[in-house]
Length: 638
Image (tube, rainbow, N blue to C red; front, side):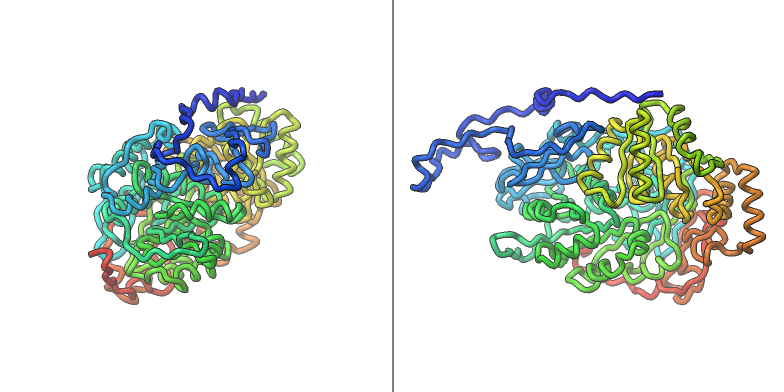
């Protein structure tokens, strides 16, 4: 089996494909010829005019021969030194502005969502009305995802909600009052009907309620909060606040919505989705994350920001520099909230939410999304949420049913040859994600595969942000259809056409296993997950066996026998340490129902098809707390 590399188009053809026309001499981008003569200072009047060229000699090409990026619309990477950075938006990174990089203040820039500052005219315009179309931006943003053959099975997913006065779910996007901008962008995304989490989360958020939502990976959680949040922003228009100007003329930005994510990759992914739903609107989206040049991100913020996607550490840095204020933040979204807390971001999150100028609980709308919410995380979440609704969609913490799981005994020394056999049976059009446990192992396996003639790339924590973004772009585009990754890529990445996930090294944590295999079988598509098992993985065997059985997957006889032996010798009872094992559940039940310390705060609710997502996944225990926060009004909701 051999993989072929795609031919790279010439640079001339790529520029021609942009449909950009040359600007007549003397004109200014976005302003036209005003008829005024440009002032030239006396000391410069005798100098010859400087030649303009797009091919600057000081630009450095970072692309190597492994999956070279294609400039602009094909996933390339181009960075100009001495000026503003410009990233291709088809694979992550920063917004690509007008032809001269960041564009000029006073001109309209329709780059996939949001006007630039048209001399602040957008602050006085009707935000509910769509701006003119841009066919180039539409082609860039809306490369549709084909619906998998199992999408209709989503109608049978169990849904359970608890909390006071839960809104009813919707059956179609037309069942809820969405504005013209959101409706048009939903159509451009080819969303024919909402997924289960969207059916129930969208009306809850549109009803201005706080929400804790648990759903399977690949279930459309990102759109579930972006659609109602942006729709409300379009309806209300800009927030009036006192503009604060930093020294040197830089404006402090006051985003209306803040979305926190644990990793750089997830932040970029959410940002890309936000640009789709902000297309043809006045809302400008920005992203800030660590591991990248903060100067470039600050320059991007200087151009305005209404919706900000951020990792906690970088946001704290930006806030302490006085460049972002949260005084008027109406919406706070914590995506992959359990992972953020598990990764030690709790101090930064509390610094952002509790110790700054963000509106208090009850005065803002707070949303938490993740695939798992164990009891400890739910208890901590009550500090951020007010009178919230708990939503469990499907078997929370379980792998998607569209994924076929295979567990194979492979001795450690045979893993590489067995991996080659699997890759040899995979078509060149399929994307394969291979997970390893260590950074050194990722580099070694990538080099091995490349030496064997398989185009592979890798991402892990020691790679620079540029290298990671380029690897993901190359993988998504199919130039290197094999991606070797550590856990840094396991959470939240949305690569819809991954056909095969291989656990070259099984993780020691069952949640990590669930999130790894959740990279395939996304949005109704079918996927395959193959795991190599040997004596090193006995610590996960009990939970893995229970998970396979509950998902109606094949459980090898040898695996069951080892699990029974391990169970007798170790005395398995309620999961690992009583935390997330299958005996204790995966945090898929509202813990407020366990003790009823305040019966008025956690009453009501409804169950979806099949009576909700109880079974072996719910967990009991913990103290009450959801009902102790009375709902408080805010002038924003009036």
